[in-house]
Length: 122
Image 1 (tube, rainbow, N blue to C red):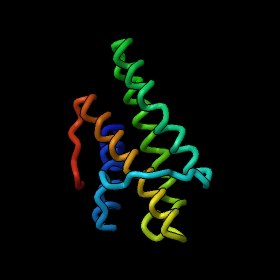
Image 2 (image 1 turned 30 degrees about the horizontal axis):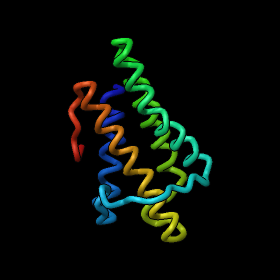
Image 3 (image 1 turned 90 degrees about the vertical axis):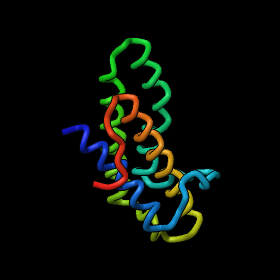
């Protein structure tokens, strides 16, 4: 069940970019973590490199799987509470798009490392 849940979070990220006609690789800039959900998601994103290192060093991919599942959960909470494409102003919209791009990138890389298919649509 965890694999499809993580895939769905990735698909949701990609859907946001399609709907907003946004290219995530072009979203350079600062991210403002104002809402509690943004802050929680930001903390999860910040841990990714350490988790990948720990999983590789200990040969225990479950560390990465657990982290990706929690990242997907944090993104789901963020998505429910924080409007991305219809944010209150352009600065907030761009910040949330940048955060979504980081989540998308990490979910995609993490799923690939675990040998789970990365799909654009479900």
